[in-house]
Image (cartoon, rainbow over all chains, first blue to last red; front, side):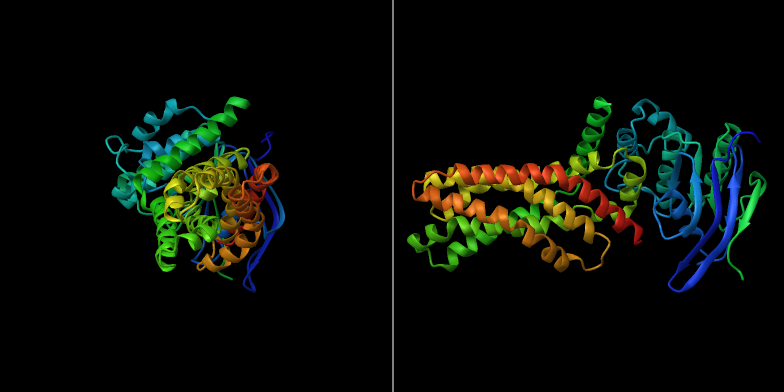
Length: 194
Length: 228
C-alpha cells in the first residue's frame, strides 16, 4: 500500500440539531477498495457522504478526498429532459467528450429509452440514468448514497458489476446502503446504534 | 481552456433552452403578467390619454421589475429539487461559468422579451415614438442587471419553502438604481432632452453586475445546498 488512499478521514465529528451523529470517526479507503457504510435511518450516513463530497461543511476533523463523483438520494436528472440530454449536460460542464454517452446508456440498460423524457421513465430507470453519470465522468472515487434504491434484481446485479469493475480498475467506492452489498464490499463501517 | 469555458456555457444554455421548450409556461407566465399589468393600468385610469403618457414609463418599468421578480422564483427551483444543482456545484470547474449561462438564458426570456413587447405596451400607455425608442434602449441596457442581481436573490432563497416574499425584500431594493435611471431617461426623452448620462449609468451598472454577480450567485447557491 504505497499509494496514498483515495479517501481518508481523521477524527470526524458531526453534531446536528443537538445530537451527535458520529464522533472520533477515522477511516481510509484505498484504490481497489469498496467500503460499505451501514447504519439505521438517521444515523448520519447521508450527512457523512455529503460532507465527504464537499456539500456539507459542518463536520469537524480532517478529510482528504481524491477527485470524486457523488450520487445522492436524488438522481441529479432534469426530468423534463431525456437521459441522453442529461448526460450531454454533464459532459458539457465537466468537459468530458460526448462520444461516450451512447455506450454508457447501453451499459446501464437504457438502450431504447435514451430519447424519452426522464419523467416518463420508471423510478428504477431514472436511478440507472443517474448512476450512468458515474461511468461518463470518470473519477477514481465514487461516493454513493443508497445506489440500490428503486432498482430491480437485474439493476442490483448491474450495480454489483459496475462496482466490481470500478474497483478492479483501481477505483474506490464508499457506499451508504441498507442492503449489505455482499462479497464485493471489502469492509464495512457501521454508524450509530450507540 | 478557452474552448472548455465556451463549451460549459454552451451546454448550459442548450440545457436551459431545452427545458424551457418542454415547460414554456415558466417563461410565459411572467410575460403575460407584464402585459396584463400594463393593460390594467390603462383600463384603470379610464383611458385618459394625457395622464397615461405621464405615468407610462414608470408603469412599464415597475412592471418589468415585478415580472422579473416573478420569473426568478423558478430560476433555480427545479435544479435544486432534482439534485442537478448540487452536481453542478460539485462538477463544474469553475462553477460561475454555467451559472452565467443560466442567467443569460433567463435574460433572453425576460429582459429581451419585455423589451420586444415594449412598442405594444408603449402604444397602450400612449407614449411618443421618441419615448418608446429610449424606453427600449434603457430596458435592453437595464434588464441584464435585473437578471444578474435577481439571480443572487434567487440563489439565496432557493432552499426556503416560502422564499417568495423574502426574495422580493432582498432583490427589489437592489433594483432601485436601475429603475431610477431607466425611468428618468424616458421622462427626459419625453421633454426632448439628452439621456446619455442615464444610458451610461445603466451600462455601468450592468458591467458591475456582470463582474460581481456570478461569484455572489455561486456562493449563495453553495449556502443553499448546504442547508438541505
